[in-house]
Image (tube, rainbow, N blue to C red; front, side, top):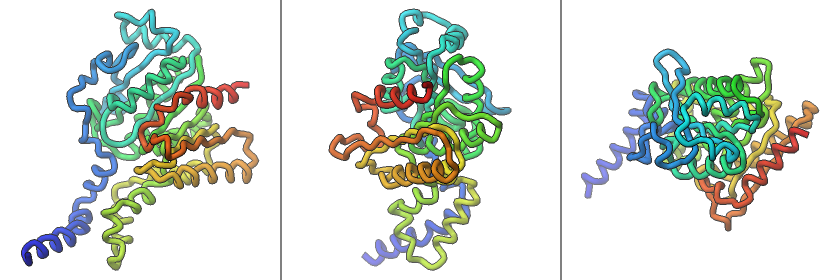
Length: 323
C-alpha cells in the first residue's frame, strides 16, 4: 500500500516538472493531431465516406502540404461523376456560396460529425471545403497556432480567387480559434470575411485549459498557475477568440448547445456578449446573432448537425447579409 501511495505521489509531483522541461507536450495535448481517427479511411478517397467530393493538396508553405476535400453543392451533383480536380475547381465559378470548414482538435476531415455537417450544407447548396491543418490527417508538418492559421488563410485566399459567390468561415471548437485568427488577418489585409460562423466556440485557450480536471488538481500548489501560463506562452498558443471578436467587423453567427461538455455554454454566451458590446461601442453596422440549443436535444459538442432546421437557420442569417 505504501508503495502505491508513493508511486501516486511521485507521478503527481512529476507532471509539472515534465511539462516545464518538455513544453511541447502541452501543445500536442491541445492539438491532439496524432489521434488520426477514423484510422482506416483513405483520405485521398473521400468518395468512401462522402459523395460528390474531390481530394486535393495545397502547399501552404515550403515543406507544408495540407489535405483538402471539396464537396459540391446539390446543383452540381449530377455532373460530378468521374470529373477531375480541375473540373471541381471550375465549378466555383457557378456563384454558389462557399463554406470553409475549420474543424476542432484530434481526428481528421473524415470524422463522422464533420462529414455529416458537410452533407447538410452540400445538400443546401453550398460548396464546402474541409481542411486538415498541418500535422493533421495526411497533411505534412507540425501544428502551431501560427501554422494552422496560415493554412486556413491560404485556403481562404485560394478559394476567394476562384469563387464568384460569398465565402464564409465556419470554425468548430479549436477551429473557432483558427477562424477568428484568420478573419483578423484578412481584416488587417484590408478586407472582411463575408461571415464568420462559430460552433462550440471557447473564449481562449487559457480559459479552456484552466478548466481541465487535471489542471484543477494542481491549482492549489504555490506558483503552479504562473508555471502553467509560462508553459502556454512558450508554446505560443493563445487562440484568443474573446480578444479577436472585439475588433472583428465580420458578420457573426454563434451556435452553442447548453449541454456542451467540452466547451461550456457560458463561453459561447460570453463571446456573443463581447461581440454585441463591441458592435455598440464602435457603432458597427454588422449582424451578430446567437443560436442556443436546449440541453434536452442532446447535441452536446459535436452533434449540432442533427438539427433538422440547421441549414435554414444558417441560410436565413446569411441571406439577410446579402439584402
